Length: 329
Image 1 (cartoon, helix red, strand yellow):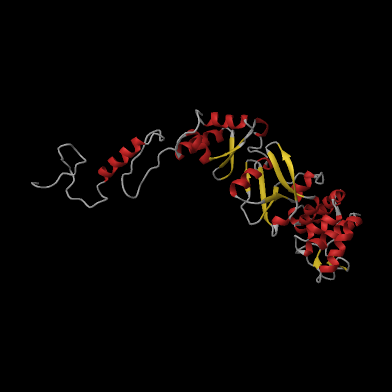
Image 2 (tube, one colour):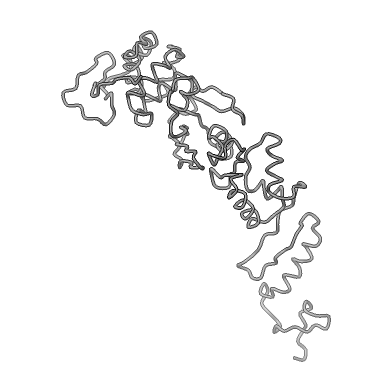
């Protein structure tokens, strides 16, 4: 068309298959040329680049590789050699300089060989040979790293905590962890992790225990006993709780027990005091009894949720004895 200006992008002679003028932003082959020149000037980006074909669809370039790892297996071995048994997908992509689809394919292949597992989306653990039968790392070896990644405060509690003090004869079927808010449970191979929301979690006293992968926060014997009294249904029932508390009694400091009780609902302390006396730990129960007498105004059920028609009442602990407790031996 005489007098029609050439677009200047398609050929040196100005020929263009598109009618001119075109609305700005719709001449995609012109825009791609600009993007291509900018990409060539960037020395940090490696690998093929897929240019945008429309305003709605764009493709990200692979991230820059920061190491000389040849593949995922090489990267995993390097982490294990320096004692790190977890990684995230962004860390993997950064290390290998690969796209998200390429990372997913590599992870899928290695997971099929039982070399890695994923307890949470985007978070992977390396499985040493001694744990291949579990299909995952033991929970205590990855929970601290997972909680750090998610920005959560936590502590190990209930029967899982009691094990650290030698007070749980039977390994619980799930690893029990307290958080400040609810979270879905973890299922990774044969490993199960249950989470419980706990008010005033930051005030609950804890201790650090070493694991093969680093320290883990565990409730103190006093806080563990309080939580067991508060969650008997998740700790094998009152008989199992009574036995565990009687074994924890040797580790319990009576004054610290009162401080731990201040972080929990009062009925938990009422129930715990009765169970301590039932197990013969009167010395540990005395300061707690004074705390309950000073604060308790209402009776509470020994067995939460159980019926209590004509059940006897324990005046000192203000407790309705709606269940006969027989500590398991």
